[in-house]
Image (tube, rainbow, N blue to C red; front, side, top):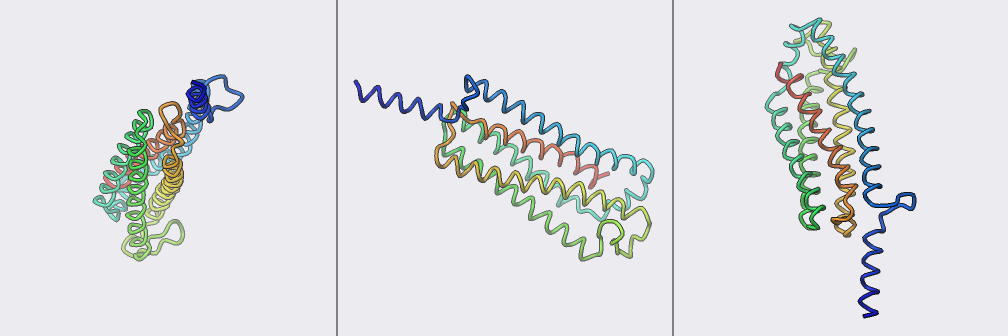
Length: 222
């Protein structure tokens, strides 16, 4: 009986190891962490909102030029990346569900599939960028594409590089975080009683995906 009681006590201590001393319960800690993440995501939305406003203003001023410049973007590659990120949203959601239901193997697999899909996204962006650099399509005053020498075209590509570049940085950050969570999941750090980092990282990743869903049609299709 004593051994059984000791084992139960040890298991309970392990399940509560994540709880910080300044919280009274896991639920309170989870709610605080989730509120913090939502506040962070709001700042991210504000960041991209400024860029969307800049795009909208120039688009209203120079609709024909923006329409012509966007023809240099490959909608098939943009569409492929959209499918890739949508699939990654599914796998990160499955990872959260696996953590909530104590399915460690499924958690690890879905986290690393998400990282793999994010890697595919970045590889596609690499080929897009290098092709444009080869043509001389650079942002701002470095623009050197002779076939489009209108003065407003470099502004379109400056907006394109800034918006997709900052989004790409967010993808890289997400890859790093999800890889770190995958390593922790292998160690067994997450379970039905504690999966806060997985869920919060999932929220971040969904925002990254949603931003691309807006970027794709605005830059590639219209």
